Length: 207
Ligand SMILES: O=C([C@H](O)CO)[C@H](O)[C@H](O)COP(=O)(O)O
Image (cartoon, rainbow, N blue to C red; front, side, top):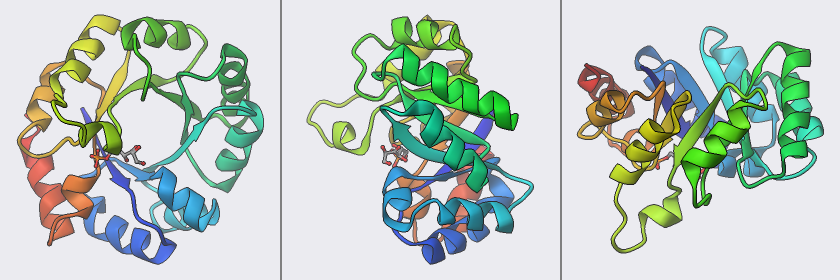
């Protein structure tokens, strides 16, 4: 299972510092949606230039203009780009077309989708690399939030999936046992006093 570090920060400078500290322990460096909205796609270019050996993930969460938005992110240096599962099939098909042109991949983020396993099967049939079983930061803060449904949805879907939604050193082994291709950890790493140590701890907890 791969480990993805989601950098939900606001400046390229901080993202470069976070990436440098965590890179030895992670496979995928994600530029979070707030970072791309704040700093622009030049942040993607900067991270790829600093870490050409890592998979660079641009969390665009595209909802429309799939081909155009994916194309500009791949041109900036992204290896994987997200489109929302709630987008129409034509948006996802357009993004996949851009990915094929660049020899890269599309990930469909199922944040907010009620029936995640059903939509997961549909979008994988459209040619995306994998889906993200995702509970966003706001959903995680809701009373009664449980992480376990994401794992069940991944198992039920029967397609390649990642899991994102507050993954940490205590929960990453359960993500792996669910059969996930990728575990995504954001706050558990960038919110820690020692970013490198936090990433190392999560890496060490992967069986
Ligand atoms: O995608 C994310 C969120 O929508 C904000 O951009 C996060 O990167 C994702 O949820 C992983 O972060 P944590 O939940 O803090 O692990």
